[in-house]
Figure (cartoon, helix red, strand yellow):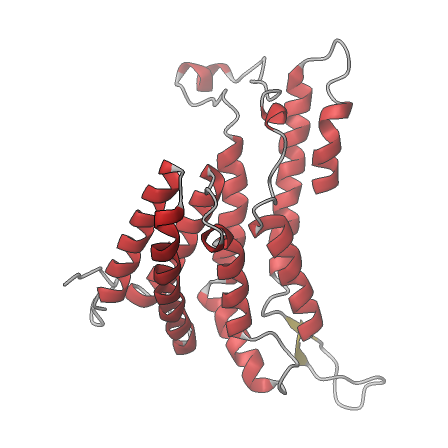
Length: 268
């Protein structure tokens, strides 16, 4: 999908064609890109289910974690094509070719519900947030934790490896004090909120080790952002880092209301 997105501007639209054909194809490829990313994320914490019975020819264990090799390969792919700084780094000229639908739905257009501005950043951000949400969901983290318990050392992906990989990829700019672009800021906010929620409003079934790792990564991030902030020249990035540190402070200082149906934020 990424290769096709790179080639698309040279192939469409053909001479005399509307740029709407280019836009429809671009959106279709981006949708397939997102589907591939979500499918890849299922390998992390994944299980092989086999319905064989004892004594069957070639009998194997009924429930086996996906191998550490395949889980790491999936995580590496997601890091490169979803969470890396260059993952969605298409030439800006590509976005200028995106055109509105020349025959929009009349009712939607009258009601102002028909988007004509091709919000490509929001669509890319949605892909990143969907994959991140799945990787850090209580279900995935519970499986990762249980897979670790059921497997020999090195036979499956560990939760620290997952957390370290995500934090390293998503906050890469903090290591060099580079500017953080708009799409990256949205991803970093989503990551912070996911870690925060593990502390203050944990989902049912979230492993205690996940909450421990979330707290550790928030503390580590706070130090990295505080160190990088004074070196950053871009105003967006400086403010973004200050806001991130403020959110981290609130999360680390929050109390969890155990008896409530939902866990509201209570700050000291």
